[in-house]
Structures are given as structure tokens and as C-alpha cells.
Image (cartoon, rainbow, N blue to C red; front, side):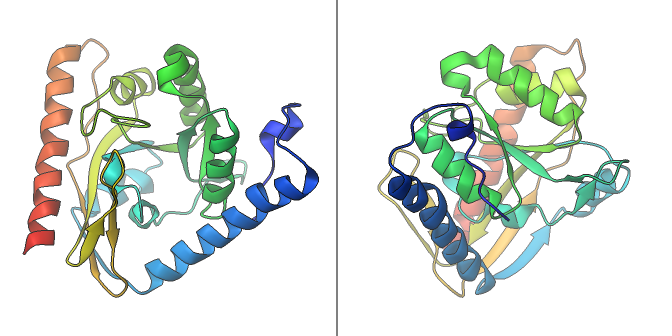
Length: 239
């Protein structure tokens, strides 16, 4: 899958042709390739997957919600191949910042078949939300880190609930656990599995946010469910 340079097409400078080729072609290709090879060494199993399969089977949209520290290998949680009624490919989309770093990230995710919606909730939340809603209405599922892109760590932001309320998509809390892993010294304490580790993907019970639901109560519910999944994942790690 090619890595189209959205920012360049909109006229933003990305650097010299060599820099563009290196940072937005070569590096994303190598990072994606290494990640895929890494994932092939893992022994993967899924828990609570049947309800999610059922939603996809009846062409309902889903929002996978997971903490930022579980982002690495999260593409394993979405093994679906979806199409619109007109035959166009669809899958999962993410929010990626409208910047050089965001373009590099988007170019990497494209190798996994993941579509990047441009914008950041922290810079212009309303505009980013509109783009996310449009993507869901066009047939994309969505993957969201409610504490991204810069934290605070494992503190819920309102974008996930707003997207679910506006689109009727089903929220699916999800987490990945590894029996052998290590943490990076980053703000999110990113969890990285060792090669040949066992990867367990656990899905929470899918649910919808009613149009007139209480925002505070819904936030407490999602925060609690995601915290429970995090505690479960840490239990797997520490045996």
C-alpha cells in the first residue's frame, strides 16, 4: 500500500525531496515492516470477540477504545476486511495530527490499512470531531486512545463519547496483554512485547451511548471499564 503525502499535496513544506523520501516513505515502510514481522512471532488469542464479530457481520460501526500505552500491536485487535455497498474498501481509522509528525505516523499506519483522519483533539477538538464523524458516516470504524496524544496517562477525554453519541457507533473497550513485555520510558509507559510472547486481546462488552445520556455518568462508566481492562492486562504481565 502506498504512502500518499497529504501535507505535500496541500502545499505544506516537508523538506527536500531526499528528506521526504527518507522520512515519509522509507522510515514508515521499515517501521511498519518491522512491526509486522514482530507481530508474526506472537501467539495471539482473543477473549470476548464474538459480540464484536456480530456487530461487524451486521455492518454496524464500532469504536475501539484503548489506552495509549497499549497502542503497539493494537492493529491485531482489528482483523476485519470491510467494504461499502459500492465495493470500496473500509476498515479502521485513527486521528492523526495535521503536522510533519502526524504525516509520518499516517504514512506508517497506511501500511496496516489504517486510515488517518487529520486533526488533533487538543488543538481544535470541534473540528477534529467533525472529521471523525464524517469518517464513521462514510463507513469507517474508529480506533481511539482517549488519553492521547499527550496524556494525562489513562485519563479519559470526551472525544470517544461524543463520537459515539453523534454517530450511534458501538463503543468497544479493548486491551492487549503480553506474558513477557517491557515498558518504554515515555509519557505513556508504552508496553512492548518481547518476540514470541503470548498476546491476549480482550474486548469489553460493546455498548451504545444514548443521545440524551448523562455525560458524567457515561464518562465514569467508560473510565471504569478501561481501568478494569488495564488491571487485567497488568495481571497477565505480572503472572
